[in-house]
Length: 242
Ligand code: PEP
Image (cartoon, rainbow, N blue to C red; front, side, top):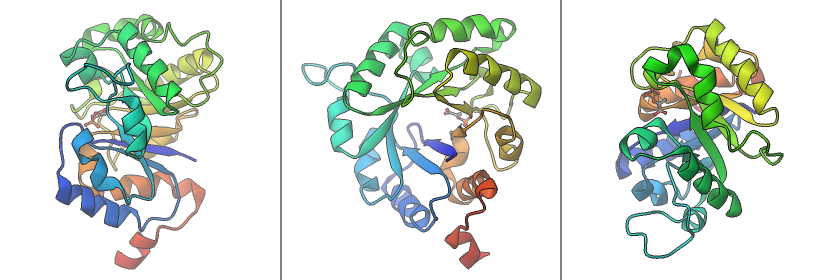
């Protein structure tokens, strides 16, 4: 099944969470929907019929780590997934590939499926292969990556409205498939209902990670509907209201 991940970042509130739960619970199982709200809103999704993800976790299970979130408790709260290494975590909170890898180990130990974000910055565009190889160096020889999802998110496309050309994205996906043959590969960066068709037509892309467009219910439903068009399964909500 195709995957659509919503990264709400530090946005939304209890009202929006309840609105999303009500609307998305009406949608048939046409793709794997994973919502990653701020940690403080996870409980508001307790009746969500799809999947919940955290936006980050710490690499220890418990202890004197004020302000951090334990992978074990995130699991208890209903998370099945956790985003790791988002470019905002790398840039604003100085997360290194080593720290992200420690978090990956801690998440896997709690059966949380990691969604590891990778991607080059604007001034690294010409050597994207080097950047991605460096970000992936800890995973390359592992044989247990079936449950790890990797999201290619060029930093220059996050929140900017810019997306890579389909040719370039196809080249990146072929490169990543060579390194990570058993993992699902997502694309993230300014995904919207206008460009989702082109992105999903690229061989090897199994889904998308959506930031800004995942906070508007109509737009997000529109993305989900297009994600699932290939599966020919019916979305009740759309049939009722359109
Ligand atoms: C993101 O936050 O990972 C993201 C891709 O954001 P946006 O869709 O807003 O570019």
